[in-house]
Every structure is written in C-alpha cells, then in structure tokens.
Length: 468
Image (cartoon, rainbow, N blue to C red; front, side, top):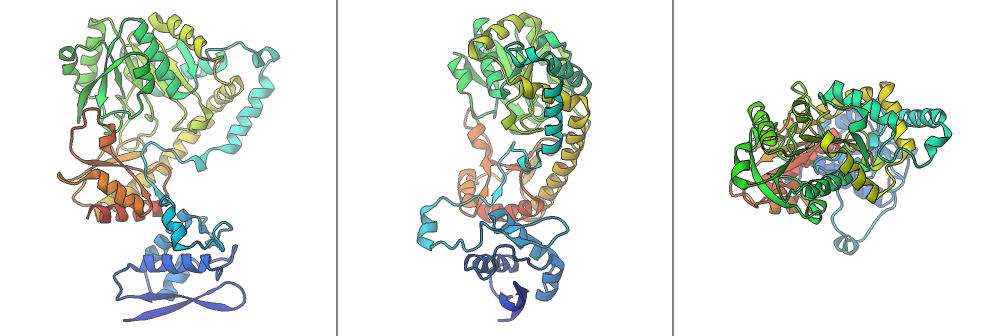
C-alpha cells in the first residue's frame, strides 16, 4: 500500500487531512471527497475556510486536476463547498459541524447530489437584474386603469409583442386578437381540452411516449388514444384507423424522445386536420434551445386555422413566473376566452407587461443566446461522459432541448437502474413512466439543464455503475 499526505491551511497551522491509498478499489476522487466531507462534518474545516485550488492540490497529491475537480464539484453539489470560477473553494456555512449519526442518515431519503431529471432549467441563472429593470419600466409606463380588471385574456402590450416575436422566431402566424395569455402550460392544456370537448371531440390522439400528467385532459372527458412515435415523430398514418377526432403533438422536439416530426408527416397531419375539420394542439415547450441545426418552424405556421399553438417562459426564464400563451384559430377564440373567464381573472398584468418589455428591449433574445451557449456546453460534457462511461448506450434527441434520451441494451431494467442511481444521489428518470401503452425498449432520460459540468460527469459514472 502506498499513501500520500497533503496539508491544507485552515488557519495559521497545517492540518494533516488527506491520505490517498492508490491500492484501494475506491477511486482517488472519491477518497478525496470522503475525507474532506468527514473533516467538514467534524469541524476540522471551519465555515469560510478556503481550500487549495485544483492545480495546487493536484500537485500536492500527485494526481490529475480532473480528479480534484470532480471531488470539489461533488462536495459543492452536496452543499459542503461554495465554488466560483477563478476562486478557491470555500467551506459552506450550512456544512460546517453538520455531523449526523449513521442511524439518522438511514432514516432519511437519499439526498439528491446530481439532478439529471429532464426538462428542468437552471433556476440559478434567472436574470434578476434585467427582469427587475423590465418590471420597473413596466410599472412606470402602466396607466392607472391597467392595474384594474381589464386585460383578462392578456394585456394588449404583451399580446402585440408576442405576435411579432413568435412570427419572427417560430414562424407562427398570429395577431394580438388571437393570442390568449395563460398561467402557464397546465392552464393552457386544460382550457384547450374543455374547448375541444365542447366541439364534440371525445377521442384524442396523443404521442406515445408522451407526458405523464394528463389529469386535466381526462377530467375534461377526453379519451386519450396513444399513437406510436418513431425517429420521424408521431405515426400520422395511423390516425384514421384509430378513429380519433383531434391530436396533441410536440412536433419541434418530441417529449420525451427528442425526435422532430418529419416534413412529410407534418404535411400529412395538416391534410388530416383539414379533411376532418378538426384541430391539433401544438406544445412548443423548448424549441428555443436548438444547438446543432437550424430551428424547426412551428407546425402552426403551416395551418393557423387548425393548429392551437402553446408556449411558455417556464424553460426560458422560470416556471415560477406562471406565464404562458395560446395562439388560437379564429373558430375557437370566443369559446376559449369564455372558458378562461370561468377559471380566473387572468394572469398578473404587471408581470405580463414586464415580459413584454423584456422581449421588446432585446433582453429576452440576449438571455436565450447566453443560455444556449451554457446548455450546449453542458450537453457536450454529458455526451463525452456517455461515450466514456456508457459506450454501448445510444443517445438520441441531442440536437435540442434540455435532456438526452439514452437508449439502453435490451434486458436492462430501467427502474432498477434509476433506484440504484438514486441511492447514490443521482436523480434520473426512465422512459417507461411516459409510455401510455407500457411497451417499448428501455431508455433513460438524462437532463443537463440544472447540473454543473463536473456534476454531469460524476453522475454519468454513477449511472454506468448502476447499470453494471
């Protein structure tokens, strides 16, 4: 057995802290993590203590910088360290002296150290300063009547700005009169379901796999009919045989597979809608985040008279804003507005006008460009980790969005993989929970929206170990 001692200055005196055993089965990175975590819990490293830089510690230990970086990232994800680019790690206040007994730890659910659940944006990146600036400007410009009950279907300012923005960025054909502002996507889907029901729709075609939350659709009295998805998206040719009367689709980036509805199938879907005098509900949930290809235009632009278009700021800004929108065909506008009045008095007007300002000043476009760079970098880190630790797995849906769909070899129990990963602090999801029919090959959904680069690499390694 060989060992190496490193010394970290916590005050004026060096404390012997790290002892690495190169003959042990445990990785060097994990040995560093374990010993630093224990020192913090025991109070040997006090809150505010600065640890050596990755370069310095790796030199003292005789290991590569990625080994130390991986250890620091893991401890930061657990809350023991505070890290900032270009600065040495600092022991966090919440971690110091936080020793717990093994018995107490066993009673608690395993903590999440690496959150790789799909479709979750990085909420730490919310643009607080620019949003506050937009909010102040909106309040300053709003006349007194705007603070009242008018604008129940959305302020005119936001609807006008959205009509221009959606046409410019997503190819949506809209005017302010056909846009309805909602409190996020959940309300939008519920309203559309009720309006479709009122027009005689009973059987609704939905992609399989698809969402896992369908309560509002079911409560509206619509029967969901699963339609299989392949590499070209929904199998549109099956719609007639299934005797469905409308469809819900995610054509730009199918959830959860990540595929794009092919050009020919888009045309066939539009032909089917027109031939049956019915409607498709298009969820354009994360189309702004496309990295390797040109953006795919909205389906609505091909048939604005029979496609209901839905979008939100839940992925681009934050779900907590509770702001979404519908672009509604003329035939449905009155019915949808009437249904919305039965629900509430509309979304907050001040926030709506703040969003209008945020878009109009160009801050929204700048925000999207910045987040595309960040998410693309994280996606690339995730892909490199997959190639290194899971070379037999097949990634899909990597060109856009906030997650990768990882096809697993047949015979692997994805539920057991998720459970094993969770016991080691990695939150992931299997695709089975999104399958309406329950049939299909195993796959994992690995999100990269809210995970750091170091966390992604550590998480994929744990997932690989869970697969075995």
